[in-house]
Amino acid sequence: MTKNLKIAVLGGGCFWCTESVFKMLKGVESVLPGYAGGDSTKQPSYEQISSGTTGHAEVIEITYDPSKVTFENLLTVFFASHDPTTLNRQGADVGTQYRSVIFYTDEEQKKSAENFIAELNASSKEGKSIVTEIAPLEKFFPAESYHVDYYARNKDQPYCELVINPKLQKVQEKFADLLKENENSQK
Image 1 (cartoon, helix red, strand yellow):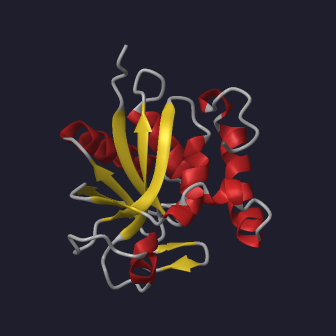
Image 2 (cartoon, rainbow, N blue to C red):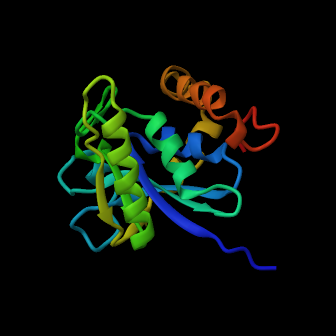
């Protein structure tokens, strides 16, 4: 039996954080950190992306089973696990490579993202507008292998303890119904 898997590409700051968050969700088959949205047609390096001059964002490519988790579920977790009201910044990570962005793969994703953002803006009590970019996915470039499963391999690193752990705890508390069973640790 072949699964009807779909792809979502999201950028919400450092891909070490977003990869860790989305790996916890049921229906998510795989999460791959990478780069998208830049001008280059050849594989950029982390160093080039970090310079902020390529136009690429740090993103994750999520392969998911829509019969187990919807694109709207992914958007709910996405918007709750980063600050979509800050332009080109997530915490101490500053630059266009850390922008909040949704790279849609079809018109259905585009419309869902636009509607989701419109609802968030309409319900905002703080009055801050969502600055998340919505753009077509032209090319996804996988990140270097040392970025894959970074959190799982480096849980004791200060960045993981101070930045990623609180995000994971927040998602575990707010979205318990969307988590894989027995998901207390990363794969």
